[in-house]
Image: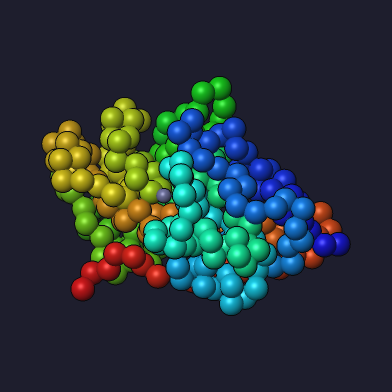
Length: 264
Ligand SMILES: [Zn+2]
């Protein structure tokens, strides 16, 4: 049977329950009419010009993204801002947008579990547990075998498909690893408290790296985008599976997203 935007909302609310989102976040259906039919939907990390272009080209009726298409309150929507122009493009092309941000970071099986699994962490636990639940931000787990930071960095580059990464070397062998997809550098204390020797995240600032290294924690900046992109294919598979098992015949596409920051 045909799915509606509302059916996709239910699927997504099941995959990433909105009550797991951080209080400051903005998640759920952010653009669109819930009664519209969805024959094709596209999963992406961001609502960016290249993603909206692909959505229009493939005639999808819905985008499911990680980063919220609307975050700060808006007082006007004109083509003078690139972000608002994208909102106009979505509305004019009847493309609904659902964003699952920190809800998808936090949920078991979400961004952080996919990242931990890619890196090969075992016995994974939540790094920053959410109040009253199993979920939470970040994960911490052990490598099958300890290795040097150089060896571990090579592994990160391979599994996350990155040409380069930057790392702060605290002189510790890599055995117990904390991860937080996106911008997780605020959780250095939690990583240390969990007994991690190494922390993998994105958006690491200079003084944050200093704090980590001098506190005895290796820190790897595998980029915000690089640590979150692995989730997108998994999310698309998961949506497709839930749609099929509920008898819906909507097609699920994955956007092609280029790296916004590159080594030149
Ligand atoms: Zn992010």
